[in-house]
Length: 297
Ligand SMILES: [Zn+2]
Image 1 (spheres, rainbow, N blue to C red):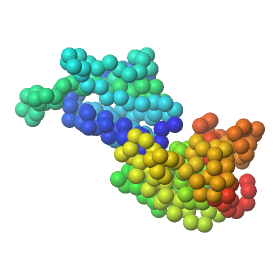
Image 2: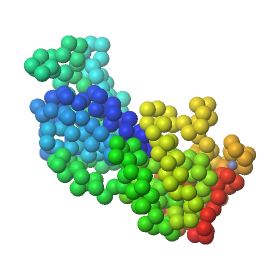
Image 3: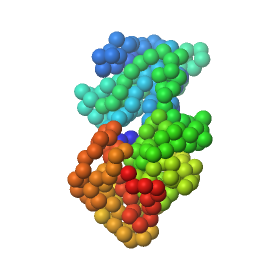
Image 4: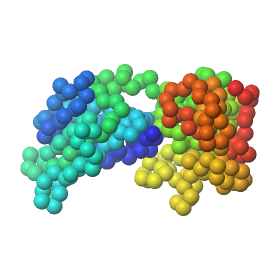
C-alpha cells in the first residue's frame, strides 16, 4: 500500500508537470465523476494531504486516493512529437488530464514546451468537488506527517484519546495522523523499541515514536526506494520475517495484528481477527529488541 512519501512524490511530479498549464481535455472514468470536463481551464497544481492527492483545476479539486496499487503517471511526447505510450493498460486509467504546452503571460507558446498528460491508474478513490470544500471534505484527517502544518502535539493528543488501543493499529489510523503505512509502522516501532501490541497509553515515550515516524517519512520523501537503514540493507525489519535481526540476531517475526490481538508467531497465520483491511494487518517485529509495555491485549 502506498505510504505518505509515495503520495507526496507523485503529487510533486504532477505539480511540476501541470501547474500553470491549461487543460486541453480531461476524462474521469468513475460514474460519480464522469460528467466533469475541465477543457480550457487552468491547472493550479497538485498537493498531497497525507495519503490523499488533490489536483486543482479551475474551481475544482480532483481528489484521489491510491489505496492498494493506484498510481499517477506523467507522460510527455515521444521523439516524433506524438503522445508517449502509457506504461499501463488504458482500461486501468481512471483519470486523464491532457494539458497544453506552456504559454507565457501573453499567450505565446513557451519555446520547447510540449503537451503533457497525467494519467491516474487504478485509483482507489476518485471524487471531484469545489476547491472551497477541501477542508470540510478532508478535515476529519489527522495532522499530516509531510504537511507544511505538521502538528506533532495534535498527533499525540489524537493517539492518546484511545489509550487502550494497541499502538500498531493506532499508527495506521489516518484520523490520528496521516502518512504511515505498514512499512513505516514496522520501521518506526522497531527503532523505538516498542512492541506493536503495546497499548498507546503505556508506551513510555510516545512523542519520540511520533518523531521517529516523522524523521523517516521526511528522509524518504525524495527517494524512490525506501531506506531506514543503509542502501544495501534498506529496512530494519519490514519484509524480513524469519531473518536475523540486524541488532540482536533473533529471527524477525512476521505476524498479523489488529486492535484485538496478534496472529501466528511466524510466517503462517492462524488467527484472523477484525481489522480495517488486509494489508494493514501485516506486521514485523523483533522479539528481543521491541518491548511489550502494559498488559498484553
Ligand atoms: Zn533484535
